Image (cartoon, rainbow, N blue to C red):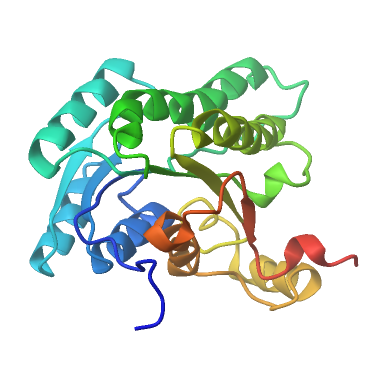
Length: 256
């Protein structure tokens, strides 16, 4: 063995929000495969099923059904997770919503408040709740899930776009603030991915979009994003801090 930095997560504890399905579920599975004990948080009751799949495969996992905008529920879940799994080494902020609303729509204010509460405020809250654990050994890892909407923009989803720009800004600021305490903070920016959020888009529309906008000419799979997330929390990733990694098949670098 010539290298000295580990690429396993044996002995680490990870919390993943939005873990019942899509990218969050895939991330929980990948982290478990790498040896982590995983706490799964989601507002869907199926979060228990995802944890059970990990346990059935020989991993260690527990699930909590909660709304990430509920500060008390989040605090209780972190406390319980620490008791059951151990102190938190890795936090994956993945829970998200997209509520389309034109700027002049009657429901814009409600969409704005709900979107930022889930997509941005909850991210900061979870970091604060886990901060003592993350800083205790100077090896904490935080990965926030942003979007290519944080690197560009689309119309009629300004709340979502603003929230994802905010996630990148939060990531960069915390990378500077927490780096001196040994915590790395990075984010991934998924492009078009097959998830529950994109399931409402007709297959033909997805194919047309991918052929026109994505150099790889397809939508991505949640596990492809999950492996990118996992790469940022490995002990071997100890010098990656403040990065915004696009996982988008080349969408954001294509000029035409």
